[in-house]
Length: 220
Image 1 (cartoon, rainbow, N blue to C red):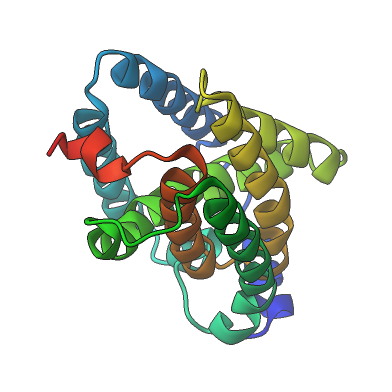
Image 2: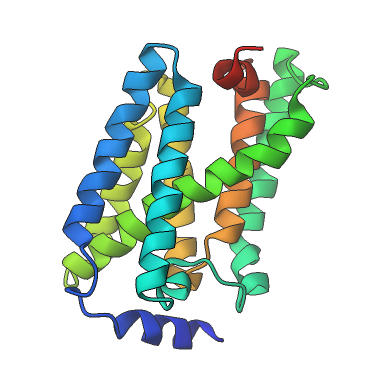
């Protein structure tokens, strides 16, 4: 299925066919809970609860309308072209973080890196689903005339604010959103965005922030 067919299929959905405003509100609420749980050292609990809720929501909505699977971006028809620009972003960003890791002395083999590279993309796919499919795409449908003018800055700012108060993480996630939002709107595919989200997040925590996200979530 080409990009034109995907876009045409997405446009066939009436703005009233999905509760965009409710979904947006739920996404914002989920984002607000993240710094709250993090403040109390319960980041792992937040990830668990958010994953259970939103995976359940995806399953429930797909049972109602199977076409949402493609509309949201959980599809493989255009997988190869969808990987093109996210791969460019990943290679450039990873190279920059590796250079910084060497300069700062943080580029070494961490104990949990393999587990993070396997598990973090799962959380990355879920985050990209919330930001892109339920955030950006819903904004595009709710404000069809403004389109990118609304969806791009709002999506990037909200995704950045979720990671308050870590300034470096806010900058990094805001920049990633600015680069990944056009990729999603072009190809409507979440798989490369979620995969690279997880890997970039792993390297950013380890090589730039000097933190182990495994320890922050599981504590051991």
